[in-house]
Image (cartoon, rainbow, N blue to C red; front, side, top):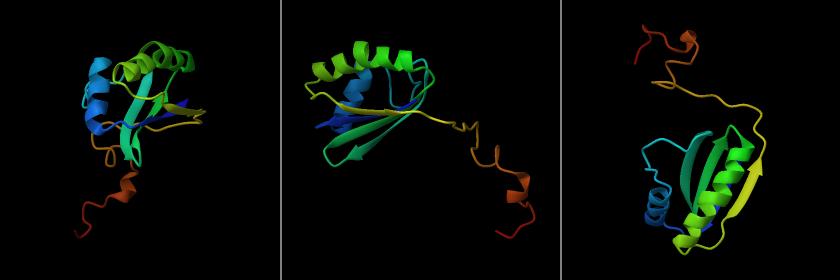
Length: 111
């Protein structure tokens, strides 16, 4: 399942503090069962985008960790939208050359 978490009034600096509350870093590993996470600025804060392998784990993380951490930081309750994910792709190493069909790369092609 995918989750979009809108943190209203949250700056990128506050996002970094949120990660610290969760004992995470912006260049580290995600929480268990979180397949990936990325963040972007929005008009009134930041939006976290995540894909989770297990809905029950996501619900537990939201209730036991994320909501208390936003409260500690003085943020209003986030707006959370979830949806089913039909499938996803992951990369390893160079995301293009490792997974693209060989015909996409001709070693003798002019640069």
